[in-house]
Image (cartoon, rainbow, N blue to C red; front, side):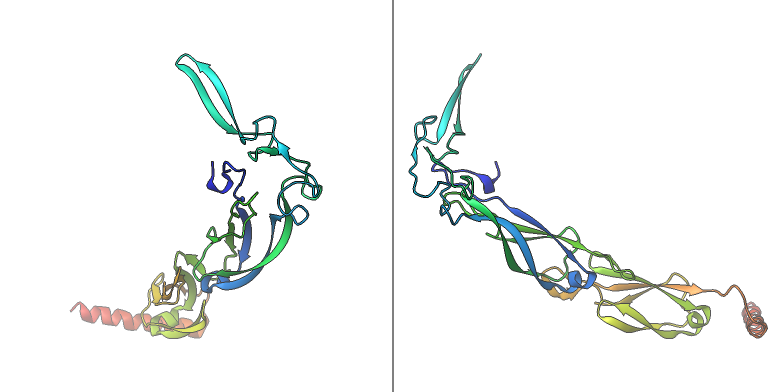
Length: 262
């Protein structure tokens, strides 16, 4: 039996855990955020003060268990008589029976809405769970409250792809820029940043932008990297002037190759 629902000999029962689903955008997950969320949980009934009994009535000893809160069953087996002690179903382990409270139907708890402030740390991802102690359902008859578990779902970014603490991005440059080199603007989680494309960059090359990735969970000063994959665009059509220049470049290249072979 789970510890959050375990019942003691005096009838006290710990409250159940509650779960809440929270959706974050990409940057909220990367850098963390503080959210105010509204939850519904079982809280102590104000009419009966959590006893479950109708106000003004008196409880009486349970006839099923004789006030013990537990009943013992016996089963005869080939190996002998097997005894098992179980919580009394008539009184739920309290040892007493009573006229139930009309507000909570004898449960001692009613469902209410509460707003709580939640601090989401930097670096979380889809599937991460945040535990908020004692914000689950109230316990019965003095039992401890359960916990609140917030399950996170992160909306992917349309441009930046996350892999653990690293960010992946693909950019396109012209074949001229790949040959001569250039500087382009690249989106990052910190905003637009200049990235130098070195001369002679090959198609499919990957450039590293250090510490432009996702902070490590609970370690804000440590971050992953952003990897930029360079795609070189080759034009399908050329103007006559462009073709002429390319042909001249080709002749120069052939001349260098021939000179190097002598």
